[in-house]
Amino acid sequence: MLNFNVADVKQLAIMLWIDLEMLNNNLNLYDCCGHGSVVLDPAPAFPDELCISTMDLNVESWIYPLFYLYGTQGYKMAIRNHEFNQFLMGRRLFQQWIIDFYVKIEKDRIQYIRGHQKEIRADTYKGLHDYMENAAAYDDARIGKTIILPSTFIGSPRHMQQCYQDAMAIVNEKGKPCLFLTMTCNPKWKEVEEILLPHQQAADRPDLCARIFDLKKQRLFISAEIPNAADNPRLHEIVMKNMMHGPCGDWCMVDDKCSKRFPKNFQNETVMDENGYPYYRRRNNGTTHEQSNGRIVDNR
Image (cartoon, rainbow, N blue to C red; front, side, top):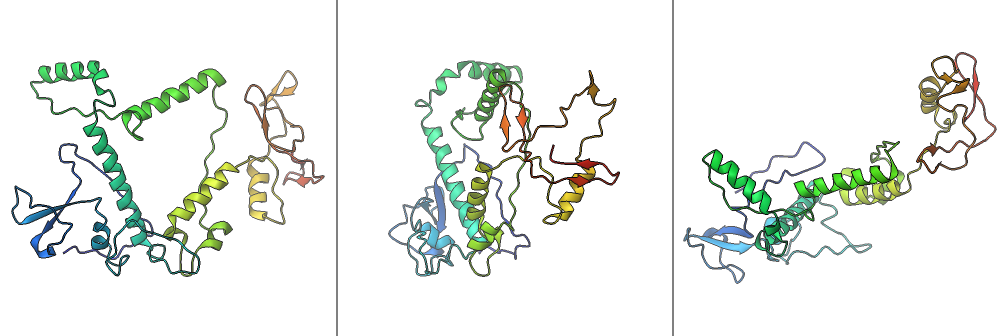
């Protein structure tokens, strides 16, 4: 019997470590679980143990009886309006259910790669095999079975190396990047709160948070305008105190011009020139602001 303590966090995660030598697609069941039509032959090494594939439709109802109250088969999560959905109301159990399915998919992909080394042309890595054999001979070691993870497997070393090479190719063609942006998901976004079911929190619906974040990321724009003091006084205070350029002096003047290109021109939208230099949105709304030193500034 498994014993689960009450979770003291809102979100769950998993660290997956797969030993390719021990990889299989079976769950092990003992006689006390009963016999059924889905159970395969006893495992040879353990006469009292029975094996069943983790991809069997009955596995989910055994692992998550709260989700499959009537013992129905898994892989069925229909979402319909005005109908109670036990999955979406599962909170942390729903997160664990999602993680379990991710692990199954990931393990299935690795199992396919392991059994199809010829199809992915693993023999082309002859130089790697020669290096490993020479290194093993030098250390008086033995090389086990070699499994090549191709670059198509997301997260593998070759995939990361390919992403790096692609990034360097873009830099070589377009020049060095001039922006480094970070964006985080806010659980208080109205788009998130409006769609949550009763008694739910944002952490209970990682699927919704991920979709809404992706939509907002696609609509991301950069603005260099001074925030309105009436709408957001705290942000206005921070910007006026810490993010205003000037007054210009010896520290930024080159040939009687500001090396930072201030004051900027008014700009209705954020655009970039042919060299990749950004011109942020700085609309002329006719509003001016006074700094603590009495200096009058606007969006430029």
